[in-house]
Length: 381
Image (cartoon, rainbow, N blue to C red; front, side, top):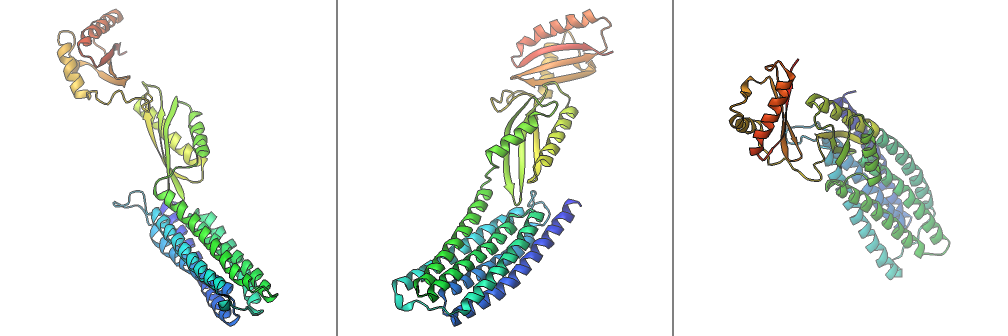
């Protein structure tokens, strides 16, 4: 399955899950609020508001699925996954506001005992039905979330589980009230509110951390570094960074290889490191590997050195009496340790001793150029 088909399947699964959740939560909201009023239970009414909040989150999931699974485009080269993250922040905020409203209402009732409601036994039956319905929704949504690797669906699954737990609190509170402890129903509503607030805060904070590019846990990052260090041809690893994008991590890393390695072999090592990172962690979606001939995290020594055209122009003047660079078969420049090291490969001189003498002469004359390092001349066979 390619990336586009995977995104389409993920979109379909998320939307289907959200529709199922929305239908169930709509039914639960109506039943809880209706029987909360009929059965005189403030806690059940609060639980109904919780189900209404869950309904709003299901709608958010549906919208997030519609837009976050779109493929990358010119304006969004990394894709649209963070739309899901932004929706999760909004979802968490809605839950926190909902919880605050329930707390204010419950405290007012506790401070004014005459406003306390007296639940009836029918509330117990509704609370039990809510527990079973929300536990079923939790298991269904969590299964799809793991299959799709969706943090938003995982959050929504836990909303369903928190609704089941809040219904258990309602069950206890109402049972207490029926046994002659009228305050328990209001306290149960407070308990529901705090659970709603915690879920909202956890989801909002986790998503905010993603939006500000918080990396993976240090232990996981260290494990990734150890994997890279075991790869053949890798001499060092530095500047390993990660950031989360939707349900996956994007990584970039600098890898040190042999300083005179060919470009193609360096590229091969980089591609192998990239595939190894993706295969080693299910949450890593992509990796950018930068090949270094030396550790540039310590000091960037070659930044101000001239490029090839200027280097060859300077050397042509210095070596005008000894060699015509245009007749050299191959000129290789190595930018290392703040110097430009030069390799000349030729087939002009028939005797190796002549090549060695030329190397020494060119090295001596190149000293007038402060940025030139070692000069080596090789005979092509």
